Amino acid sequence: MSGTKEEDRKSSSEWRDFFWNPRTHELLGRTATSWGLILLFYLVFYLFLAGMFALTMYIMLLTLDDYKPTWQDQLATPGMMIRPKGDQLEIIYSVSDTESWDGFVQNLNTFLSPYNDSYQVQTNDNCPPDQYFIQEDSGEVRNNPKRSCQFNRTLLEECSGISDRFYGYSSGQPCILIKMNRVIGMLPGKDGQSPYVNCAAKREDSDKIGPLAYYPPNGTFNLMYYPYYGKKAQVNYTQPLVAVKFLNASLNTDINVECKINSNTLAAGSDRDKFAGRVSFKLRINDK
Image 1 (cartoon, rainbow, N blue to C red):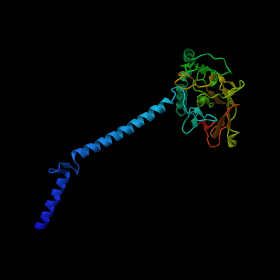
Image 2: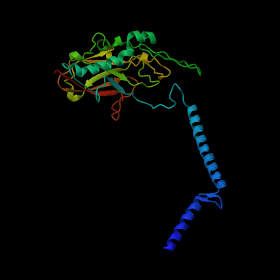
Image 3: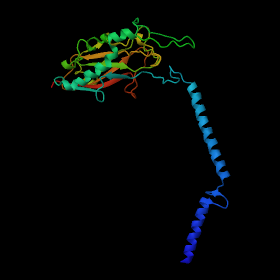
Image 4: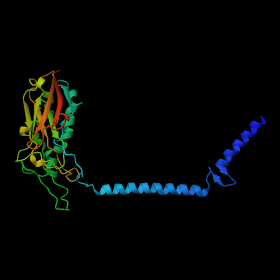
């Protein structure tokens, strides 16, 4: 028993000496000089790493342009999107149930508010159509902010929400707005030919879609809205739209619709990217 107690006292003494040895003045087995050198090494080491990181970030930031991306994906064809989007690109509603389509109407009202003619006249230019609105910089001198062309809400005619504040949803003739994604510097047409949108039902639904009306006429994205110079350089840029009105779509059935962009400079969309140059959505109009 006494031997065990002696061993315990010896072990406890060894631990105390390891933590702080009053004879050698060592803390955790190291003297103050040793601890000081270790702390100095790690301080210098981490300051060096921080300096290298800061220098790398500084050099990288020198290569960036505030107005144009240094590196830009070479998009063969920009993506497209619709408004209102609905859930999972589905426009499903009942003509007789106002609550089923009121959300679509409110979505369109909000989306089109920057397109009001009064606002466009104040902020953007009345540009000559069918030609690019080129605004080059003069060497190192920036031509910023760049001006933008007016896209007035009235260009959407029956789908503007002005003559019909319900955008045709109350009468079973809904309007769908289509926009093409912005790509800096893109020139989507040549020889004065603007790209245009064409919508059709998928093969199995071809007899259900009925006639369509496009606004502006022929469903064109006029060349005067291009090229786009970026959000910071072209602060008042208004993205052009095309409205598609379904005049006599079949009721109480699903209609799978695909809208494509047609251009003499943009490549056809890829089957691997369903949004490249096209957008697909489902339309269902119920009468009850």
